[in-house]
Length: 317
Image (cartoon, rainbow, N blue to C red; front, top):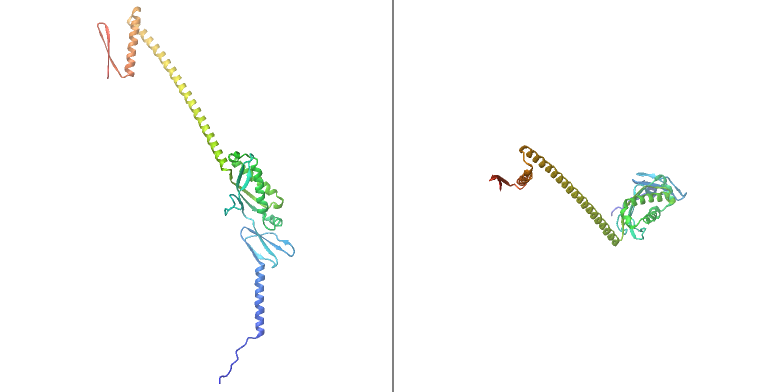
């Protein structure tokens, strides 16, 4: 017959001690988890105490710390934030659809815009008290952007929104800075505002009409330029012809005077009688004409005398 050996048992008191220790560890872990907080890069954190209603000054990240278990941490991105409005708002980088506006001549248009800003951490606490849901972008900034862009576009005609694009962009940026900085609910916490006017979209038919008009204006300018150029060239040609004609006439005068002087010298040297003067003059002019023909037409002449008559025979060189 086998002898029965009883199994060892754990002391109930020890079990209770281990259970208490386990509970303490869990409580400490939970308390530690609720007390420990961290704030990331570009973020500011504020500790909100629901019991006293107090809000701590912002803690700038990156950092971590401890807080009371019953308080909560609210984090806000204070570095560069953006607000994009373009298209129908379905773009993953767009926050809202393009802004529907009217021009001064009552033409409907859509404005695509991007607004960037930072948050002044020194005024973040006041901003949070004004917008505890952290929705100042939707409730204030976006609303101001729509309102003041519509105000600006109303000052310009549709054509001017194309011709004065850069000027309108600068005016919109200054207008939005003044509006956001002056908004009482934003507490002056929105700073370093930048605005990009991405596009002003007019109705397709109107845009096509403007392009046709601009093209026609360019053609007219080009035609005017060509007409003016032709007038200038014609005047230059006329002036050149006049100068050439005057020069030719002057040269003929000089040549005539030279011929006359040469004839006078020959008459004096050869004692030609007055009754033979005209015949001699005709002969001299005739010979000079032949000389000119020989030079210009590349023709040679053989000159001889037979029975008292002058014989002239042209030959090719």
